[in-house]
Length: 306
Length: 232
Image 1 (cartoon, rainbow over the protein chains, first blue to last red):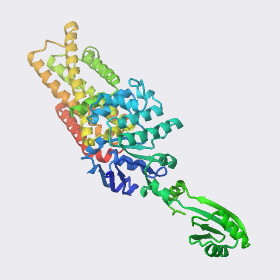
Image 2: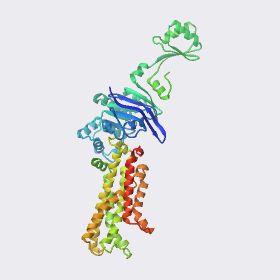
Image 3: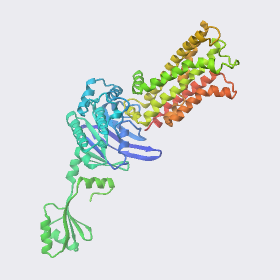
Image 4: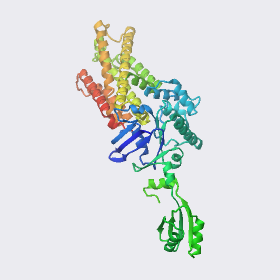
C-alpha cells in the first residue's frame, strides 16, 4: 500500500510562535487515518498545510508521491476537503457553489453534482441559497462538494462538529461507505477519541504541534494490558507468595501497599484464596483493563502507559 | 486566465454590483451638465462651457469617480473573501495564489475599465443632447474634438482602472480594511480638486501617470507578496 500523504519535518510558525513542528505523517492509500489531539494541538494547521490553505514554514509534503508546494498544486485535484467548517459563497445557491467548485478543478460532469447530492441525501435544495441552510445541511453539502469529483483522498477536520447524534451517525456511515465502496482514503481529525475510534484504521496522536505516535487500532488492542491490582499491608510477603506458590513472574510493586499482577491465567479468586490461607489481609483486589481511552489519554498527556 | 476571471464574476453578488454600476453611470452621465448649468453658472472665469475642447477638461476628471467603484470591487473580491474565508476555498484549488490574485486583479481592472468607457460614452452623449436642447456648451463639436475625446476616453479609462488598484496591496491584501480602502479611493479621486484648492499646479497628465504607476506597483507587490501575506 503506497502513501497518499507523506510529510517530512513539516512545521508552521506564525509570528515567531511554533504551531506545528517536525511532523512526519504517513497516510496510506485506502485507509481511514484519524488525527487525534486536544484542541489547539495543531491538527487543523497540519490539515491546512496538507490542503494548500496555508504555506508551511519548513518541511516537505508529498501528495500522491509528488511534492506539494505553491508552484506545484496539481495533487490537490485529487483531494476533497472540509477544514474547520464548511465554507460556501452564502449568497449563491447550492448548485452554483458546486458548479463553481467543479469548474475550479476543471471537472465537467453535470451528473456528478446530482449523484453527490443524492449521496449525502440532500434533496430539492439545488436552488436554495446556502445562507438558508442549517449547519447539518452545510456539513452534508460540504461532503458532497468534497466527494463530487471522486477524489482519491478526502480530508475532514472535525467532521462531526455541530451535528446532532443522527447527523453524527450519518456522517460516520457516509465515511465508511465512501471508503469501502469507492476506495477513498480519509484523513480525519477529532479531539474526541470515541469518534475517531469508530471509523479509523490508524491513528496519529498530535500533542503540542508534534506527532507523538502513529499506531493502528488493532495494534493498540493487542497491546492492551489487563492486570489485577491488589492493596495489602504486607506487600513483600504477598509478592513472595505469588511468585512461589502461583509461579507468577510478571508482578510489579507500584506503591508501598499496592501490587499489580500482569500474568494471565490466574483469577482474582485464586489469588484471594492463597492470601487468605496465608493470613494476609486484603484491603482491595480488582481486575483492571486498560482501555483505548487510557492509551490515548497517556499519549496526549505525555505520560507512559501504566 | 480568462476562465478564472469569469469565475470571479460568477462568485460576485452580481445584482448588488450591477446596481452600483447603474448608480455610478446615472450620476456621472448628468454631472457635466449639472456642473456647467448649475454649479458653474455664475462663474464666468470657469472656462469649461466655452467650447467642446474646453469641456474636455471637465469630462476627464469626473470619470475618476470610477476609482471608488474599483474600491468597492476590491472589497467584494478580496477583503470580503478573506473575511468570510471563501479565499481559503480558492487556495485549496490546484492553482497558485499568485495566479489567483492576478485573475482577481485583472477582473477588477477590466470591470473598471469597461465601466469607465461606457460612462464616458454615456456622459458624452448626454451632454451633447442637453447641449442641443438647452445650450450647455458654446459651439458644436468638431471631428477633431470627437477624435480627441475618443482617444482620451480610452487612455483615461486605463488610468482609472490602474488608479483603482492603488489601495489593493496595502489596504486590501495586507490590512484587509474596507474603510481605509474606500478612503484611499476617495482621496485619489479628489486629489485633483485638493491640489486646486491648495493652489498647487500640477500637469493633470503627470498626475494620471503617477496614479497609474502607483497602481502598477500595488499590483506587483500584491502578486509578489501574496504567499507571505495570504495565510488566513
